[in-house]
Amino acid sequence: MAADAIEPLGITTAEEEAYRHIQRALRMGRYRAGDRLIPEEIATEIGMSRMPVREAFRQLAAEGLVVIRPNRGCIVAGLTLDEIYETFEMRSVLEGLAVRLAMPHIDVEVLEELERQLDRMERASQTGSSDWVVRHQAFHLQICQLSNRPKLVRQIASLHVVIEPYLRIWFDYVDKPASARAEHEILIEVLRSGDAGKAEIVMRDHIVETAPLLANFASPGRR
Amino acid sequence: MAADAIEPLGITTAEEEAYRHIQRALRMGRYRAGDRLIPEEIATEIGMSRMPVREAFRQLAAEGLVVIRPNRGCIVAGLTLDEIYETFEMRSVLEGLAVRLAMPHIDVEVLEELERQLDRMERASQTGSSDWVVRHQAFHLQICQLSNRPKLVRQIASLHVVIEPYLRIWFDYVDKPASARAEHEILIEVLRSGDAGKAEIVMRDHIVETAPLLANFASPGRR
DNA sequence: GAGCGTATCTGTGTATCCACTTATCCAGTT
DNA sequence: AACTGGATAAGTGGATACACAGATACGCTC
Image 1 (cartoon, chains in turn orange, brown, purple, cyan):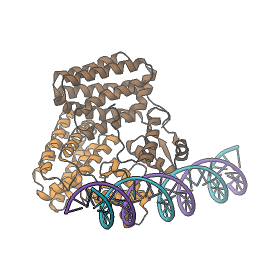
Image 2 (cartoon, chains in turn purple, blue, green, brown):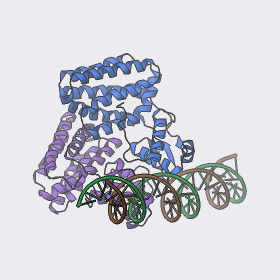
Image 3 (cartoon, chains in turn brown, orange, cyan, purple):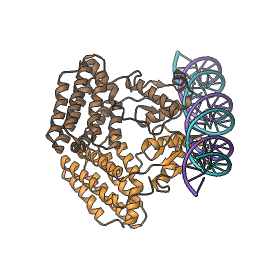
Image 4 (cartoon, chains in turn yellow, brown, blue, red):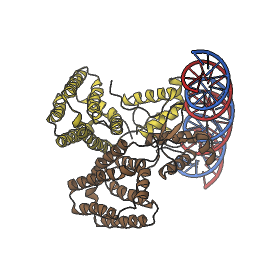
């Protein structure tokens, strides 16, 4: 599965486990923004000492998922409305760049694979759960990965993770509209056209247009 | 001084000192890519235990300045030629976005301040040292900060830090050409015009054009 | 009765210690 | 003579213990 482009840099077993455990909880929206993460609690929960958990906090803080206030513990980061917009703005230009750079590597097989991804996405949306969010991310990252720019992809994936809880909430409120398929079909279409500049613009618009929809619903918890 | 937009998120005294110490050394190019960073060495150097140094390593790894290989220590990260290009590509779209968003906040005072920044940059370039690099960063970040997008600015600043050692080498090889002033004067000009879309394009071109110049010189150490 | 100060408790941050992994060197065998 | 395997040493990662800082609650004073 190509989804997890986020590989914590140099992380060893114990610490990696702590990292993955907490990140999953955060992505699933198990905590609300502002909730305190108590190292000892999590440590015992996964059967290790506070130490690897702390290191995991640090990693997560670097990704913007939590905030560590000196001597005052670690809290789940929340995005203000402005920050949600900002994240989408950053995604739009970065993914726009990615799709432009991906263009030379587009061929028939790739386009077919993307179509299959869209099918999976649509099917996931009907399971009612938020599997759709995962599939949606996978679709976007799939395209980005074709740019052959590891750091760029990593950065984009990191932004996806940050907004994931908000996407889930959105999905749970509005039953994912059928227009989503058409929206993304357009992306495949412009990839097929071979016009890199146009693809960049289409991708940018696609992403920026999503933000306002999301913003009306999203606000998981205080700040 | 507005320069240091990179604030390690939640870092406490001892750890912060370790972080700043190592980061400064890295930015100044004191180490070469691939050099091992020995925790104990650095710890005694700044008079603390290995522990805060370890945490500092983690922070630096998250920023891409070092690489931690499990059980095999911490080495100074080096960029391949491709990665240098990639970094400039990312800078170009992100700073392009920043300048576009900054446009509504441009006024006469801001333009005058930027002119003064350019003066400082030019003066610094004549001191022969690589103060120029610092001033150059300050100039770019100054513009970005006008976008009023904290996360965006942070991300851009982080990219600047990564390529800073390479910029220094470049500066030391070629005596910074006088064209640098003109290059950046163009940016102020387009800001003055008030055309946000055009400003974005000019910024993107400005940054992308720098990469190939740099790439010929840069390669500080093995990989 | 309200506000401020102090004391206690909770919890984070640092250090030391221990175990385990890795790398290097030497010896033995092919 | 070269390569491989084993042993030893060095260094990294994890846990536990300790110290300090912050928050909250209670008491005293105004």
